Length: 206
Image (cartoon, rainbow, N blue to C red; front, side, top):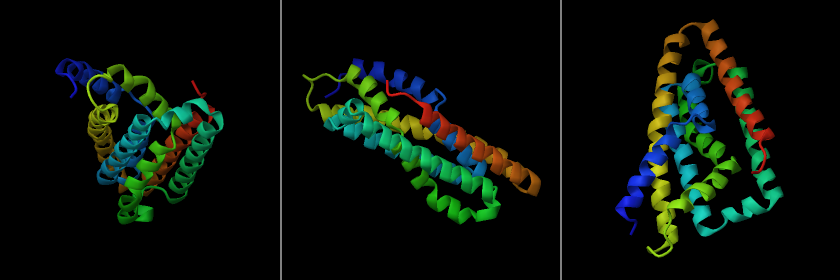
């Protein structure tokens, strides 16, 4: 069991991290602009599931492999770069949701959020640095503690990133009826995805 005092310390810290702008938040913002509120919510759910996978890997000790073997880190990182550039190209080429249909955007939104999170090796390094500060080896299963803390982070993530995506989706809905504005939105969203790819490409393994 995790002590109440530990949970009371962890929850505010987790919320502060959830509200800190980062790659996941910007991705959900871009998804909202591109496709609307519902795909943005699904993308935020994908991001949160990806976060839970990272937490599971860290709890099992596999995260240490990413932290200590440079080429594993780099392989994951460059897969993320390629996928973000693929999303950017598709967005710039097709414009906003009206060009590709809301059904397609919704269908792949969860998958995109999941892949973008899983191919960011910085997430698992963050998990390895942050969560162990609150884990007590004498309080039962370390893996269960990791997953409990990870679930708190994931819930906060889906709420905060989802709200950001809904806001962006509302702004996009206002502009979507204008073909020129729709095209500009496609370029803006593609620019966000490209910027995230560049950020991932130039990051260093801390």
